[in-house]
Length: 314
Image (cartoon, rainbow, N blue to C red; front, top):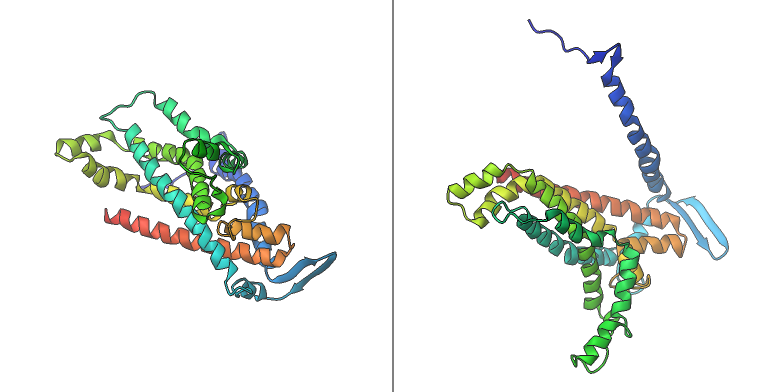
């Protein structure tokens, strides 16, 4: 005869009850500092509320007018939201794809049971150090290095690689390349450590069994390491995607907030910040935030579904 499951008690204390009590602070913080602001953002996106000189217009309820305006062509015939979303995705792909590939390669290298690399804590510290530098300081450093009077231009002229100084901030390719390079340098160390932790959590006997069965290094990686690492890899890709869509500080400081040249490095959050800081159009800023949230959620679900399907197949 089976006995009913009893709650774990000691001295009349219900530990199940205390478990719920301990998680109340998290849900309270989420409710007041995340969920309520999100709902207020959706609410404010339905209103006309902006500054016109010294006059405050609104708040006046306009329904979905802000969303319609968001996807309407401007005087040049282009849709600003789509243009800046495209800029953001290009910058994310240029920085995140090499970041994940290099981090995966380094993680496999440092955790190889064959190579048995020594001084792993030292290497972890070194590759993580760029992540400790503030993005604003990193951006100012790159701006100084690649400016017209910076050391990079002086080196190029002195070495005879060019007759005149190169204006790195006048070309779309170089500006996007610098932004992608900075994002890569700042985050590949963090990604490497996460992937290393995932690989180290895999039972080493699986690698040894695969090797005994005659599997080569590439077969071990694609048939053993990658399928078992997929949960961590999904987390890394989704967080990198969300962080890329929220890219702001690096391009904002490097291009002095104007997204030069010709707004080709203006990201979605820079576009959002323009409504908040310049025009004080809080209704449009709310609409941009809501659409950005929906895009982030949709892409995250797509990536999660695609990678988990691949994981199930493997």
